[in-house]
Amino acid sequence: MSVQVNSEAVTFAKQLIREGKFKNDEGHWSQHNPDARQENTFLQTHEIAEYANWHLGLDTSKGKDTKGHYHFPYGDFKTVHRDGLIAAKERAAQQGYSDIENAADELLQALEKQANK
Image (cartoon, rainbow, N blue to C red):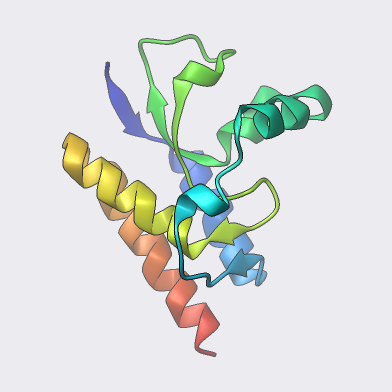
């Protein structure tokens, strides 16, 4: 598996954070992470490119039109979640994807800065 940072998703997340579309939640990402049913419901009414915007990683070994191409989710298709960014950062670090880890950290810092305004 070859996973690289999804720069379009990073840009999208930055914009959401600037617009205040985030949750500075503390808890477990598993409480907010969309499950397969929610993902499929989203894809019934949205393009795969919109789905891609909610994932910080791209698996270049999988087709762009498959859910398996997208990794490291950070939001609930409406807002960026602090705990989603933390989970993405930790998982990326564990799996050796430093570019995704750094992107998640940068977004986390931006969210925390915006939350403290």
